[in-house]
Image (tube, rainbow, N blue to C red):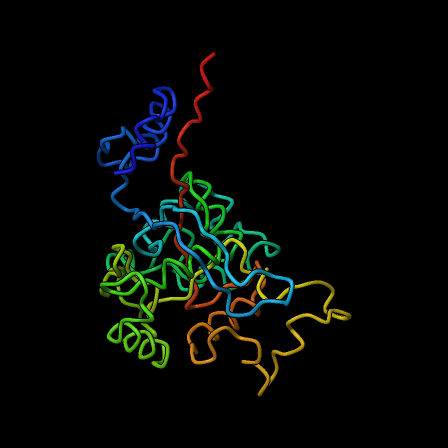
Length: 284
């Protein structure tokens, strides 16, 4: 247990409890009086090593501890969101914020389809970054950063460093080398990682808050940075791990996206900051 968390002021703990109750997802309080969300896992602080970087960018990005939803947002959960937010229903969403394929696999604004019960447990896809961000805000949460997502996804089944776990490495490579199914499995069908998080690999791609920062270092017409080495055989030049083809696939997808795009295999999950301990003023 982190003793610093016990120093949260009463007012702060009260506010956290109120927020949790408002969103209806709090299960209990931990020993520090902080709401314990059953759908969130704590991802310990760590370091993300970007696959690509420019010479003036750091080799390692420190990532503070945070909370991450243990599974992608489901169609049933997103249905609750559009019920409460009519502007994000399929017929109302502006094309500036979501392509015409937005929620295109639903039968209507509030109709998942004839197999609605089964579909409700599957990850929601065909949602834009704008829609995903709006959902996260409605929940009092946010989208994870790319560094946070990559840090969480790097954990294996039994070790924090999945790259050193042969069973995990084999599973990840198999997942990324298998064509996606037309009918997605329910969330949490796969094995959880060390942190108790499901489906970071093998179910759907996922939006991150800063997806569009990938490989962007300035004006593409005159930039001498990294993107000049990302074509054909030079694609792995300068990469931190040339054998990590799943990371190349994720990087390639993110760099091709625009915030209004919707894809049949692109979903999302939310993140939440951990409460920060208060800093006591020195006594005089």
